[in-house]
Image (cartoon, rainbow, N blue to C red; front, side, top):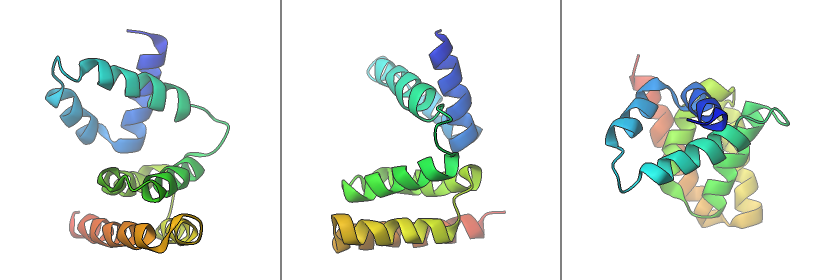
Length: 126
């Protein structure tokens, strides 16, 4: 295990929570093991581990990019992560308004729909 992998797992747990990471690890197979290592080292051990910008800012950027590119499947996961990154509901709303202007209203509209659903689910859970 590389230092970058260890750093990535630590950061991944900080942002996404132990339950999510444990579930992803338990679901890992020979088919996606290399991919899981890649995202742990690259996304989490390099990009998210950098202190060049705050976790709040990184969270907002990630949500904006996911919405702008139409990668909607990961938006709920990153909405839930805002609890750990410090991005507020207001930050998320502002992020998607920015997406509407620069990447398109339909994508921002769908991202807001997912945000509303996810925030509602988060409020229902203790």
